[in-house]
Length: 150
Image 1: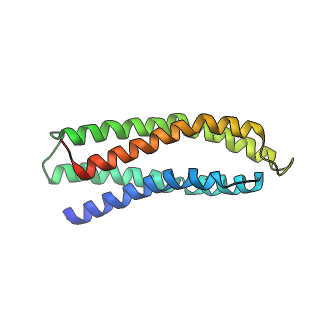
Image 2 (image 1 turned 135 degrees about the vertical axis):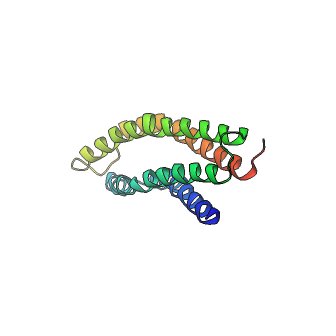
């Protein structure tokens, strides 16, 4: 049972981390409004995977804590949970609302021309630091989960 839960826990973390790292990279290669619209369309459709992964991650994580009788007695686990909550706030509270605005701009520009509007660049520049911070949090959480330093 422990092995299966751990496998599902790791699989769920991949479902969350993968899109968070890959989608911003893919977005950088877009050179036209059509390409951006396509990328955002895929991103919107694939957004369900990290959300399902998040639920599975929480359920399996709690279940693993119960099975191992660890509870919240480990500092690395408490820090991981705190960083995870911060990451969720960053993604759901800051990044997603701004991305919706950007997607609307790109969708509206689809009919006008093939050039990426200047407003897109300005809005993306505001999101990139937040995305980078969320990615760094993911790396920190992953390191804490694997290394369990304290």
